[in-house]
Length: 93
Ligand code: SF4
Ligand code: SF4
Image 1 (cartoon, rainbow, N blue to C red):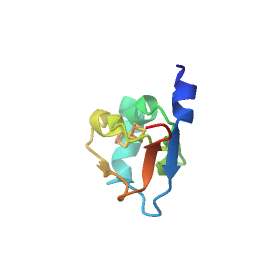
Image 2 (cartoon, rainbow, N blue to C red; image 1 turned 120 degrees about the vertical axis):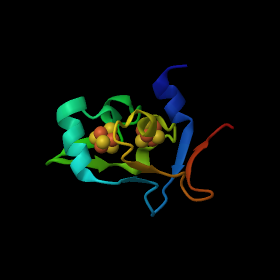
Image 3 (cartoon, rainbow, N blue to C red; image 1 turned 135 degrees about the vertical axis):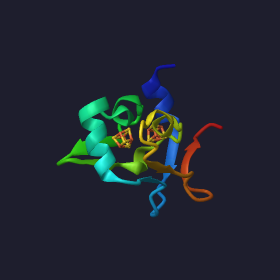
Image 4 (cartoon, helix red, strand yellow; image 1 turned 90 degrees about the horizontal axis):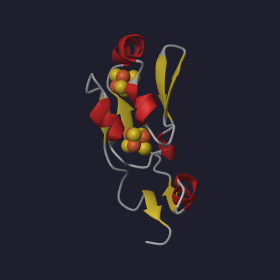
């Protein structure tokens, strides 16, 4: 099954409260210059983008894989699961 087909099997219930946050945007600016922001590279769902000197998080697209938290060189991401019943769920599972 292709990745696009697998993604189609997911459903997302939006949590109004973002489950991902940046601790300090100044670290992201440094990271972008030094490490090219690995969160952008590693995220399979294009949740992170760097715009006007800041990291923007489209948390609604998150697949809850946890990769961004692991690769962040500044430990700069506050990562929680969405609140109970919200976030991704498997359509056939
Ligand atoms: Fe910011 Fe971490 Fe992403 Fe770097 S990897 S841009 S420090 S959130
Ligand atoms: Fe992207 Fe995974 Fe991080 Fe969600 S947990 S933002 S899908 S890398």
